Amino acid sequence: MFKKLFAAVGVGGATVDTVLDNPQVVPGGTLSGVVCIKGGSVEQTIEYVDLVLMTEAEQEAGEDDIRVAHALGRFRASGALQIQAGQEQRLPFSFQLPLELPVNNATALTTPGAPYYPHIRAAVWVHTDLAIAAAIDAKDRDFLDVRPLPQMQALIAALGQLGYMHASTDVEIGTVRVNDIYSSLGCYQEFEFRPTQGGFGGLTGVQEVEVTCIPRPEGVHVLVEVDRRFRGDSYRALWMGPDWQRVDWATQLRQLIG
Image 1 (tube, rainbow, N blue to C red):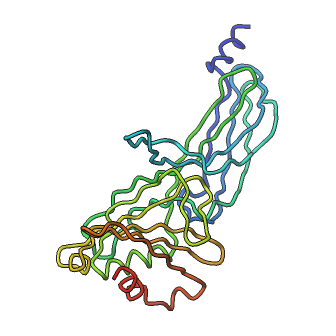
Image 2: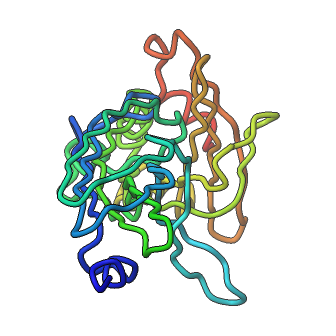
Image 3: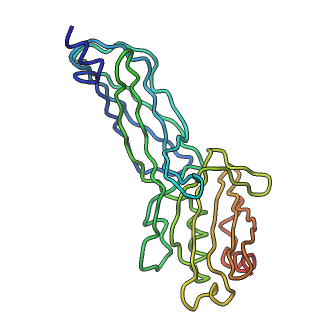
C-alpha cells in the first residue's frame, strides 16, 4: 500500500532514460535511439511515451523579452503499456527532424578565419515524457548538437568575405515570411552579422545584417535585413535553389546590401 502511495508522488516509481544513437544532427535529418523504461517498486500503467522536440526562444513580454521553452514537434514512441516492478523495457524510435530546426554547432557557425565563436542562444533538446496513470510523470532531457545546412555555411562565408563577422544567433517566437513562404514551427532563427573595422560594411554605413533562413525541400529561402545608420532597416530576399553551389554569394550579397 505504502509503495503505491510513494510511487504516485514519484518516489519509487518508474524512471525513463532516452539514449540517442547520435546527438549530432542536421535539419531534416533522422534522429533515432532507444527509450529505456525501468519499473519502480510497484506495477504501474504507462499511458503513453512521447518525445517532444524543444528549443529555447525569445518572446516579447510587454517592454521586456523573456526566454521560453517552445515545442517544435511531438512524436509518440509508445501508447499504453504496463510496467512491472523492476522490469526494464526498451522502445526503439526513429523520426525525421524538421528542416527549420534551429542550429547551434558553434564551430560550424563561425565565420571562417574569425578569432571568436558567435554567441549562440539556440538550445535544442528532446524531452521524454513518460505519462504514468495516477502518478507524477517521469521525464528526461537530451540536448542535440545541430549542424547548419551547407547553404547556411555558404552565406556565413560569403558575408565574411565582405567583412561581416557572424556575431550571434538566437531563436524568436513568431512567424517570418520570405516572399510567399512562411516559417512553420511557431519560431524562427536569426543570424546576426556585424561589420569588422575597415570592412565593406563600415564603408556603407551598415551597422548590422540579420539573416533568416526558411529551408524547404526545393531549396532555402533567405530573408536579409540590413540596418543602416540614419536610414533604418531594409529587407531583401534571396533564393538558394538546386544550383546554389555554382553561385557567387559574396557578389550576390554585395549587390543586395548595396
